[in-house]
View 1 (cartoon, rainbow, N blue to C red):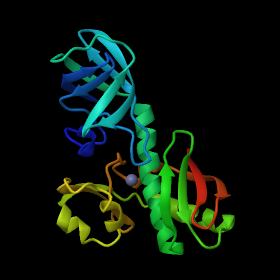
View 2: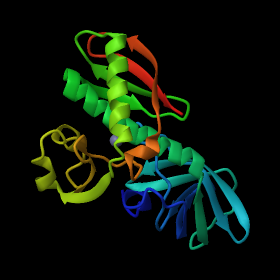
View 3: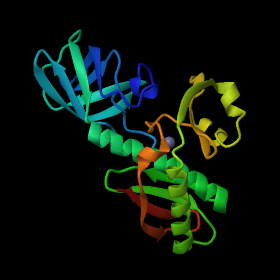
Length: 235
Ligand SMILES: [Zn+2]
């Protein structure tokens, strides 16, 4: 994603930019942006664009032709306007904690049960992970969550860096995900939680696993052998 500031700094809450295009008075493309556009199971950021003292609430951010498109609730922004963008930080930070938690849960599921993640949807109240597993046992899933919490408490620093596509594809485990990235992506963003997990990922993450807090299992559902489902939440 071009000029996506969250890719290098998940903690950027405010930024300056220039309006590059306006469509239908409500879809705004900026010269750069810290707004996360919905994708990869992570909901879009919300927030506001400030321009000349006016506030334009951003209700959704999505990907449009390789750029981040911001949907604003109020018309008035024009090309070349200088703006300040502000992320709704409480919402974003909770999603960051949910996201890093998902990576550790996925890794524990794979390491302990060879379960493969088949889908996920992060949410504010609770997040969902779908996975394949032969035998579904709620007590076992609770044990995996307990193990995840042990990792979280080890306070491991999360590393984010970029690797050339060819080099990244040689790393076992990230190949599956990297293969869905379009070939024009020459550098892959790697999220590494040392000792636990390493994968190509475009989402926002916390700096240290301790920021996640305590993960609780909400429910386990059985949607078929290749579609087990769990919901978890955070304190
Ligand atoms: Zn991820």
